[in-house]
Image (cartoon, helix red, strand yellow):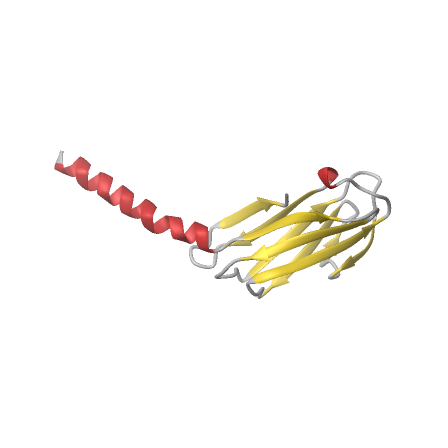
Length: 127
C-alpha cells in the first residue's frame, strides 16, 4: 500500500511539473482571411519563444504562389515553407498573393517547433 501511495504521489508531481512546460511555449496561427487572391496568416509566439519555427503551407491543386511577404525559405510548387529563426514573443504576419481566389477552408498549413526547455517537437495546425 505504501509503495502504491508513493508511486501515485510521484506521478502527480511529474504531471504537475510537466504541465507548465507545455503551456508556456506556444506558436500558433490562424488564417485572417483576405480578399480575392490575398491570404494572410496571423502568427502568435508565446514566451519563452522557441529557437526557431517552421510554417508549412499547402496550396490547393491548380493554385500558384504569386508573391509572399516575408519571402519563403522554400517552395516546391504545392508547399511553401518559411523558417523563422530567433523569433521574439508577440505576433507576426505572413501575406500571400495566390494565382486565384481560395476559400480559407481550402487552406492547410502547420507550424513546427521544438520546445526550448525539454526539446519536444510540436506540430500545430493553422486554423
